[in-house]
Image (cartoon, rainbow, N blue to C red; front, side, top):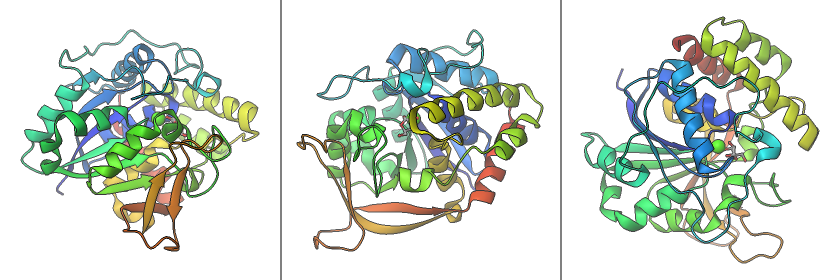
Length: 311
Ligand code: RIB
Ligand code: CA
C-alpha cells in the first residue's frame, strides 16, 4: 500500500484532535508534520493542544510547529463557546512529551513539502492563514503540492453566522489567497461534516476501545457534544475535521462534485460565506472539488481503527 504524504495544519480543537489521530493512525497516510494556527483557540492554546494530542496518542517523530496567531487582516475571534477556554476543555490535559519545532509553521511546511520525493497533500482543518502565508512567501512550493484539502465552508448555511462557517469566517482573505493560487483544492464543508454525528452509539464505541487515547477521546466527545447541545441544540455534535482526513486516506469514503467556489469578503452580513455554484449558474471556471456525501459507516470504522492504533 502506498501511503499519501500529508502535512496537517490545524487549530486543536476537539475535532482537530481526531484529525491528528486519524492522520497519524491511518495506514494510507504518511503524516510528515503538524502546524498550528489561531482559530478555535489562541495560538498558544492550539499549539499546546497539538502537542498534548500527540502525547496522548503516543505520536512521536512528527514535527509540530506554530504558525499565525491572527488572521491576515481581521482580528481573531476564538470558538471558546464550543471548545472552552483551553480550546481542548473536558479532560485533564497531560504535560506534553513532544517538543515544539523551532522552525515555525511556514518554514516547516516549506521544508517538508520541498523535501518530499512525492507531491504532498496539504490538509487544513482550521482557518487557512498559514497556507495563505506559505503561498505568498514561497509560491514555488506549490510545484510539489498534490492538493489542498480543507475542512471549511459550506454549500449551505453557516455555523458562526447565518451564512459563514467558522474556518472561512475567521480568515476569508486567506481562503481567497489560496483559491487564487490555482492549486488543486477540495472543500469539505459543513454540508458533509454534519453527516459525521457523534451519537451515543458512536461515543460508546470510541470509549469501548479501552486504550489511553480512547479514554481521552471519550472525554473530549462528551464535552464537545455538551457544547454543541448548548450552542446549537445538537446533542450529537458533528465531528468535522476527521472527515477531511478520511477523504485523503480513502477517497471513496466521500462522494464529491466539481464546482465554482468563491468567498465573500465584503458582505456586511455575509463575510466569510462560501459561494458554491453547484449548478454552474455563473458560468465561471470550476476551481474546486466539493465533498457532498459521506460513507458514514466506513468513516467511523476508520476513526475507530485509528484510535485503536494509538497508545
Ligand atoms: O466550523 C467547524 C470548523 O471550525 C472545525 O474545523 C472546527 O475545529 C473549527 O476549526
Ligand atoms: Ca479545526
